[in-house]
Length: 51
Image (cartoon, rainbow, N blue to C red; front, side):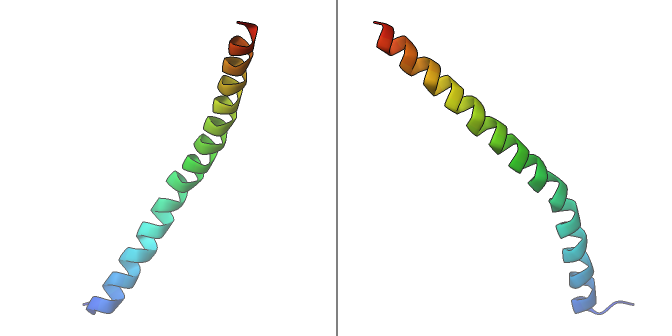
């Protein structure tokens, strides 16, 4: 039988290991997103400058 503190420590460790994967995905996605938004902004500016 676990004590409550041991259970919560085990649960939090499990949660943090599970959260590691989405965190890396979010980092990748955010980087990609920033890159594409920069490109989109540049295209927008070029279109605006043509007119």
